[in-house]
Length: 470
Image (cartoon, rainbow, N blue to C red):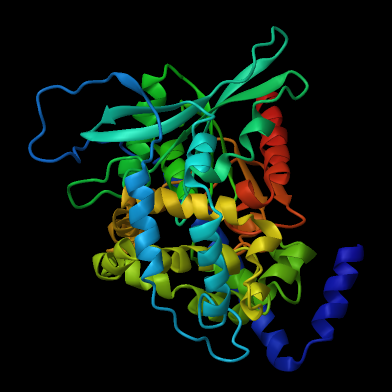
């Protein structure tokens, strides 16, 4: 009754134009409801083909070595000397007055970062940090796939749940180093055995030699990896590209994926989304919005269109001509650092654009940030990592089979407030049909494993416990 009274008061509080708009939307929703229900009931596509591929150089051989080899991250004095020589030849430019990070990475602060990189940062020490967890490589579909594999300490009274975590761009496997100790601890009888691969073309995973390597190919390779490691069932976690790759894994093999946890979820287009965009600001409960959804989503154009226009220039470059911009980044360590670290500023909080230092050291240490940059620099993987955008966005993503296939495995969503786009639960449910956990996170942005590891770990743990009790 209270909701009906609120509905009545809200409706008669609107002007005549908005009243007619809401009435029209309600009529359209009733008519479309039956059509949507019929379409959903008709749809029987619950999985997508796993397929096969070959991304190595040359022709596919009759057989492939499936051995898993230990791998150690290494460096040399020559590598470090080359880096320092290139840094010493950097040509800096002056930023505009009072521009903060509004024009990109502020050159005044960049000089501070570069000075630290050149004179204080110890790459050999950070290589030792990288090697504190066991690394491996194995050949899959012609590519050397790199991953780390971390087991919890043995305890007889705990269940060990296999978990694969997948990074995105401009991150790497190193994003998860702060969350790993939290997940491999015993939590009331539950802990995780964690596998963290590098997407082919990123870091220490070999780059594809042929065109067309997209998220579906990465998903298939990672499914093969988990099978090769002996896991018949496992959990998945991802953000950025990792969210799409793990989603594809769940679509391909829902019998293998016990649960899917995401910290980034893209909504689909359609009538339900359009209707909720129109009604949501006025009557959010009618379209399944909470007050927090309204706060994060609206004004819609400002937060979802204008903000994305300001933050997606890189995407258009990488989805069309990645090699052109990549050539310069692959040759200049300072250019590479500016290009990558600017994302760690704005994607952590949009207000960081107004700060001269981009707010980088409020959430991250320079050692952590530069270690991620060095993974790209020492492997020469910036171009191949950028190509992943073209391979996935070179044609209409909505025409792909995965865009037209639901996800039916138990799903958990962690909605961080400073993520680039907010996806309400009601929108996520259009594709993810079995959401068992949806959490409005109190703080954090696009890189939660590095920025807010304890918050993310807590949500992953509570999600897995829920699934285990189903």
